[in-house]
Length: 228
Image (cartoon, rainbow, N blue to C red; front, side):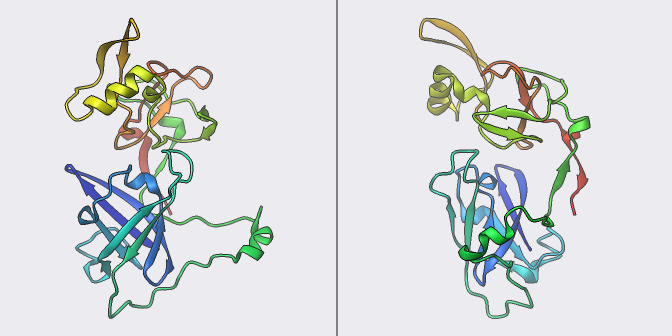
């Protein structure tokens, strides 16, 4: 197991990872949200906790981070972290991966999932006061752009589905204070941030989901329980 500790703009995000080679950790691309700065990332290999102070002898320096070339915020959510060499690597085993010829043998089999972070509880998950659907209960499962979600997602929000809002986000993201009302294609539209936020977002209506309704950013009550 590896703990990926990402800090930027005063915020912290913790992701789990697996050591698949002596110097390579496999993790999720959404941990970085397309913004890669190795100075903001710490990797603890063989971690029992994600506390970099308690686990300082297990912290590895990073050589580079590579996101899957087809990652679009939902699909191909994979990233590889290449670590710098270390004299004493400790007694850390590699994740056991099947050979290509053995993939059919493991397909459909039960597996155990381990990781650091929080486990979302869809029974008591609500939106905060920033999105179009405020202080409403999340509706799980929901579908967005062909993918099904059973918990808050870290994909870009539905705001990107409106061409005018997407263009505004790309041009004014660093300066804008969302939500904003803009004129686009001879109509007045309400635009929200396309960023997924620190806890992701959810749908509040599983059947109707538009760029400016029926979704919101997940509140703190969606993350309350430690995973195993």
